Amino acid sequence: RGGAPPAGPSGAACAFPTPGASAGRPTPPEPVQGVGTVAPWALKMPAPRRKPGASSMDICTTSAIVTGEFDFGKTAEGSSYAVPTKKIARESDVQAFLQSDACKDYMSFVKCLCRKLVGVKISDVTKEPVSTDLQPLLDVLATLSSYVDEIPPKEHILRYGNPAFRDWHARMCENAERLTEGVLPEALRGAAKELAHYLADSFGNRTRIDYGTGHETNFFVFLYCLARLGVVKEADSRALVLSVFDTYLQLMRKVQQTYGLEPAGSRGCWGLDDYQILPFLFGSAQLINHGLIKPKSIHNPDFIDMFHKDFMYFGCVHYVLSVKKGPITETSPMLNDISVLGRWQKVNHGLLKMYEGEVLSKFPIMQHMAFGSLFAFDPPKA
Image 1 (tube, one colour):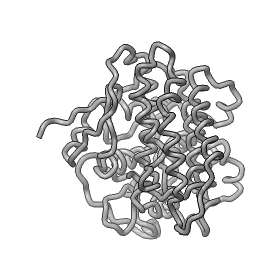
Image 2: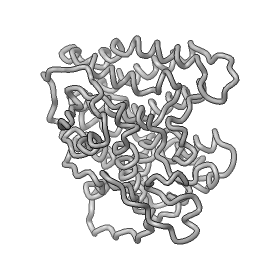
Image 3: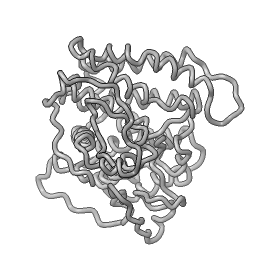
C-alpha cells in the first residue's frame, strides 16, 4: 500500500541508480508510461546554472506534471460534499488521473509549499505562536498520540505487526469525524465526513498492520482539502509543513516503533527511510541555496547532530541512523546515491519527480486513493 519509493534489483523503473552505481557510470533506467521517474541524479547530468537574480519562484518547479500556481484564495466553500470513494480500477485510470485537474492542483499545492520553505528552519516557525487555524490540527495529532500511550503493544513473536495497532486504529477511526469537526469552523462542518475519510486513512492499514507513502499522501490530501476550504491560509504555509506535518511525522514514528508497522509493499529496504518520502522532499527545499550544508553532509555525524532539529531532511537521516544498524551506505543506499549531488535544488527536483513517478503513478498505491468533492476525479468510461 505505497511503501517508500523503490529502487534496486527488482527490475522496476526507478528514479535512482541502484546501490553502488555511483561508483561507475550508471545505466539509464528503462522508460515507463505516465509520469517520467528518472530523477536528475540517475543520469548524472551536470546541474544547470541558476540565472542571476532568480528567486524562489524559479525553483522547486521542475516536474513531469505541468501545474499552475496554487491559489489559496480560490476556495471550495459551499460545495456539495461527498464521502470519498475509490475510482481507480485499472492502469488506464492512473494515466487519466495524472492528467486530471485534481492531480495538477494537488501537485501545485505541494510545489507551492516547497517554494515557501526555501531557507526556512523549523525553529524559525516553532518560535512563533501557531495560528488559530492550525492549532486544532496539532490538537488532533496530540489526541492520537495519547491513544498510543493508552494502548500498549501486546506480546507477540513476529518482527512486524503488533496486533495492538488494530485497537489503536479502531479508536482513531471511531473518532476521526469528531476530531475533524474540531478542525473546521461551524460553517464548514458539513465537510467533516469527507475529510475524516482521508484522516482515517493516513495512519496505516488496520488489517495488514503496515504503513507507506500512500497513507502519507492521504494525510497530505487531508491538508490540501483544508486549503481548498480556506481553513489553511497562505500565511500558514510554512507552519503547515514545519509544525503540523512535522508533528504528524513524529506521531507516525511513534506508531511505527510502538506497534512495529511493516513498510507497505515490503520494499522499504530500497527506499529512503522505509516509510516516507515527503519529509525528504520538503527538507531538501529548506536547504536550497544553503551556504554550508551540502547533500554529502549527511555523512558527517557532527552536521547531523547540529541540524536534525532544524531541517527535515537531516531529521530523517538522524531517524534512519537511530533505528537501523550499520552505515547509511548500507542501510539506505538511495540516500547514499543522492549525497553525491552538488546542489539541493537538484535533489529537490529529483525527489519531486520520484514522488510523481513512484507514488502518484503507481497503480498498487493509487488504487486505494478515494475521491470526493474537494479532491475530485472521475475516470473516463472504458
